Length: 490
Image (cartoon, rainbow, N blue to C red; front, side, top):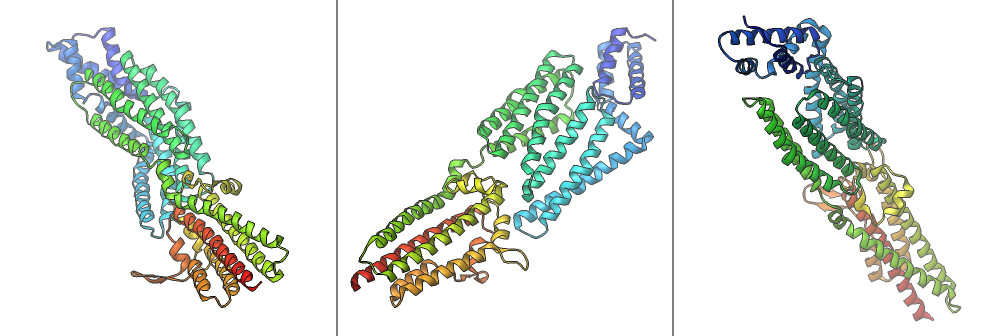
């Protein structure tokens, strides 16, 4: 039988080693087996190149090489077999739970939080470690002592960070930042170094670098989107376009130069890139701050009007106090109204700042400075936190009922001051009404439930800003009414 040269045997070794066979004895046996196949074909008259191509076709172009290792490990390694089973079972369970939790979250059904918690916990602490363990057994990676631990820590940090973000637990931003930093600046560069060291083709090395750089830019864009840093849309567009229009064509070209048929994995890769980029483009095209600002424009208008009315009302009080001919009872009455107005507005501002602080997990002092910048909120459309905060949970009253009671108390103060003037009293009652609202579907709904239950955070903040404006408008109307009466009686 015709023997193979040293260079020819090295070529076969590279074919087997390109699959990173971690089981060294199996790699040697596979090399011997492929050598025997090629020698037999050469004996029948084929050249080495033709025999090599035929051998690759028979084994499925290295797909079956990896499958042989997997089957061998399943047969001889009980721990690996258990890990593989655990990975498959808990991947299915955790993904089903996360999918169901997402549906429950969208439909506002009870139980979504518990399912998210269990699903992500299984995903992060059972499936993902099992998957990393299986990969460590299957792939012999140079530098694996760094790569696998970093992959484990960054993946768990990202998954738990997403869970905390969804559930509004404290520490979500820190976990996400740790995961993104490790993934972008440690894991991807380590994998690139390993891939370059095991790839002989310079063109494929450059292709791998382009792909890794594109992925890093995309992840930086996703991170920027999470934290509302500038440049997120640009980074997502550049990364996605480079991945689709540069890396994928280059990878396809070089992959087909080395293979004589299309592998199923390549088709899945193309679909994955398309779906991944579709997600990135949708994320990049997400509503911009200028559009978000339209949602909070009512708040901005109300806040501006409230400030102007407060200054004007203060000037009226100051002028009345400085008037030596003014009746003491009249001055005391409007001063009492003005003081009550300031107190209820101060309380509403505190409620708004507390809500903003809860939504984005920021200090109340920082939240207080955002009265005209609610479009910068990360969780501006959240409905769970406002509902719990204003409406309360089972057996407990929320802050919304305190707002209602303070509004009614202030309204009663103004109505008492209005005296027998029915038109002024009716204006105050309508302006500061906290009556139940009639709904066709569910009948009468309380004022708190109507304005704050299952209402996005921006809507709740707009309602509170509108209430502030109504308070100072009612105050101005009452001061003007009392001033007119006082002038007539002088």
